[in-house]
Image (tube, helix red, strand yellow):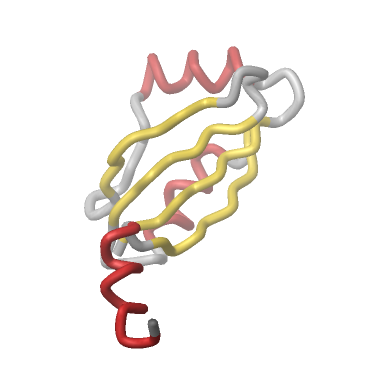
Length: 90
């Protein structure tokens, strides 16, 4: 299952977030896969695409970053999958 993760940086935390990522890596538990990410121009939000079959792995990962950011986890599907699923209703 794919998830769009919206990471909201705490005020002034961008430097600390990037420092921790440089020093410790993403700190992902086994079974939670990072796919790609995009950061807004103000370093306020990071949009991350991740994959896992176990939604509870996000809780472990978030615990390691909750002092610097808060998160919104949204299950998503690709546009191609969405089109295929809805085709019968068109």
